[in-house]
Figure 1 (cartoon, chains in turn yellow, blue):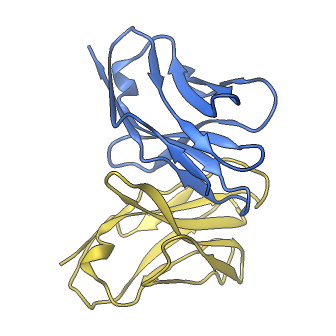
Figure 2: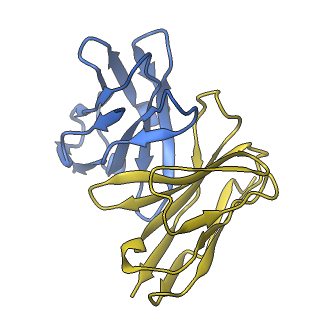
Amino acid sequence: NAGVTQTPKFQVLKTGQSMTLQCAQDMNHEYMSWYRQDPGMGLRLIHYSVGAGITDQGEVPNGYNVSRSTTEDFPLRLLSAAPSQTSVYFCASSRKPGLAGEQFFGPGTRLTVL
Amino acid sequence: AQSVAQPEDQVNVAEGNPLTVKCTYSVSGNPYLFWYVQYPNRGLQFLLKYITGDNLVKGSYGFEAEFNKSQTSFHLKKPSALVSDSALYFCAVRDPNNTDKLIFGTGTRLQVFP
């Protein structure tokens, strides 16, 4: 299994540009989520999904959209990039909601917005 | 509000000495607690979790953690540190109002010196 994969690894955007961060998992996990990691702030939840067709907001959802058309994929869209969105983004998945199982993390995407 | 505190930004320890990385939590109800480790330029990796039962939890790479309900703590420990243990460590608690949503601490950088 490849586990959780993320593309791209690095991205530089100009303010106002849009882009999609890709996330895929091959473990048939129902739960997927996106976090951003900023120095001194730990990881903060952006959006999450408990299954295909179901998404919900985390604690910092503004400026981001998600969709979950398949179990495997959970892309994160930046609608109009801002310098405040410069961060490292992690996608994570876990087997089934409510089991308190461990989450598996992707390698991250480092995004810089100029 | 649910929260996790990691009071030390950095912990330094000599190789072969015991190490402790501190974590305290504030959550309503019974806590589900986790430790994750992040090596440079990598995603987070699960180390161990406490759900219920024995207060001493054993995890990967020789790490263990002690749950203390009266002190609302979940400190990470290892009897003998290795240089390869140097990494960023995150404590997390499951949000009791939202299954599988994790609330992370700000992280503690562990530096093990030869």
